[in-house]
Amino acid sequence: MRAITIPMFCGLLIAACDPSAELPGLEAETPPASLQSSEIAQAEPIQATDPESQSDTVATRKTATIDWSSARADFAARDIEDGVMAQVASGGALAVPVLLPDQPVGIASVGENALQFRPLADGYFAVQPGEVYDMIINGTDRLVVRPDDLGTAIESNISFEETMTGAQVSFSRYGASYLVEFMCKDPATAIKGSCVSESDAVAAVETLLLAGTR
View 1 (spheres, rainbow, N blue to C red):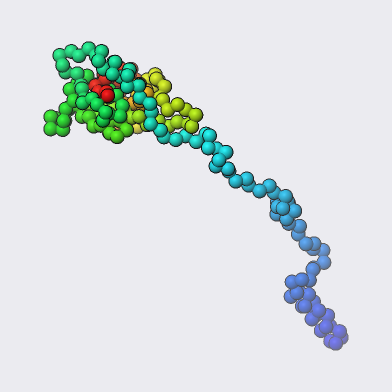
View 2 (cartoon, rainbow, N blue to C red; view 1 turned 90 degrees about the horizontal axis):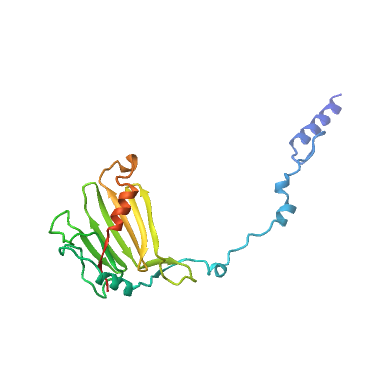
């Protein structure tokens, strides 16, 4: 009995230790369909984007065409009262016609409430301090255009928008783009809401006067 039992026991041990041996009643698991090589081979390759095919729709920054003739005509037709109207040195150094509040332009030493003006290579910016908000006027000849555009800014209506720090009004005139920001003095503006209403902001922008041109 011992001569027969020992070989049978060893045979069972060998079968249990051999990873290639299959136990009765178990079949090999079929890989999921998502992992089958036949479907992977049929997957369509990702097409690379051709940059030349999108060249006609790419926007670029260009210099606007300024209507200096209209600006000069409006500048000459101004109705100056008491000589207090804001005015800056006109000439070829200006990149865009300058629109400012109806106040004299001051320098830093005049006082913190004076209207400050600074020309830039592509336009200008000015700051009019106030008790409730500071008004910041930006003018530029830079445009974001597409290749088929003519490089001119269409005269646009005034657009009002609230911001985290107050509000802003944008518009175009003489081919230039203008942005007037109303920076509220209250630190809680983002929570309480803007310190200037749309009607007041638009009214302030509409009172801006032409203060300089070429």
